[in-house]
Length: 107
Image (cartoon, rainbow, N blue to C red):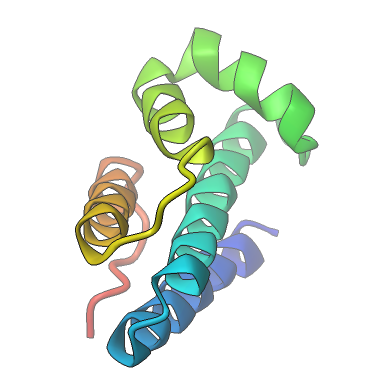
């Protein structure tokens, strides 16, 4: 299951990168946010052996992984999508990948 989630993270980032290249920052943001939630799911799965719905993930992250929770909270309510914000989200997602010892999405 974890391998499938890791592949989803990589796929979300790849799709987001393509949207950035096309200048579609809203869809890029959505893809990177999906990658962030997939990372959160991997962390929860590693610790509990279960997949959690998003409504359960946030309280879990708040207690167990505040560093991930802070990133989720920071970006989950964004309403304007510009290149700077989207690039910052991508950078934080890639940083979390390194912190969680997941394979790098970089080519």
